[in-house]
Length: 328
Image 1 (spheres, rainbow, N blue to C red):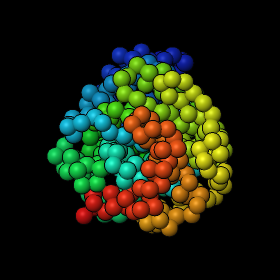
Image 2: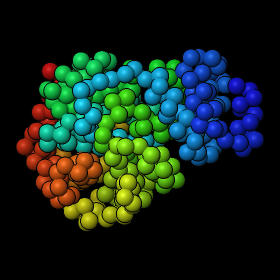
Image 3: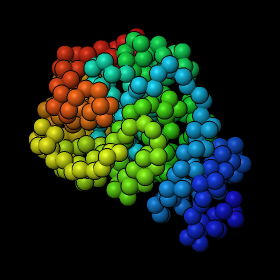
């Protein structure tokens, strides 16, 4: 590792093969804690390259516990995290709204590394039991049109570095990998990205895949459609900037989408929104994200049609029922 670190400190980058090999060795605990933290820190000081990201991704997918849900006609809505905005769990709420429309969702998530409450925190707080095999995940998918994959159960490499990530409390390249390594490999992915440079790297990487994708980036720095300003959306066919009005909503204030101070705050707010008691601003943000995710599938018509489906899911309690069905 010392040679690798010296090489990287001299402003060199890794090939895809080198990146893959190193991450596999990290997962096998071949290096000590100081060496791994030093390695992770390199990527806090510069942007990860496309080859490095591809190599790290291949390593995690190769090491991942295999999952077979009998279909890949699934949606994942996920953000890189680490935007420092401490919003409520927008992508997870949007996932339940999508599930409430009848579209099946395979969401991967984790505990918050640089936020108060990640998707795993909020679902665990609500009584959800993490599943770690295909049969149990399939059962959830049948009951609630959604299953949740707690990333450390499916990615041994993430397990080995989790304590170090928590100690650092900063966004690392593992945040960037999370949205790319869902072991289900769903056909449709919507990824929130906190900066445009990384959005470009993701776009290059995902265009090589068969699955459909949308990348969303709020131009004021959120890794989701925040409606606090304009949003840039990337897809296989290009990119476009959308205002809140383009998405049929009004602009909202950053304070109106704050996630609270504790995990308990986050889970209470999560249920409050699903129960139909969210504020107009909170509802608007989750509906915008859910609608874009539905549109990405190409199965439900244009954005307006998808928005109507998303509203029905939230307002008629279908999204809430999806949550209840998998917590029973």
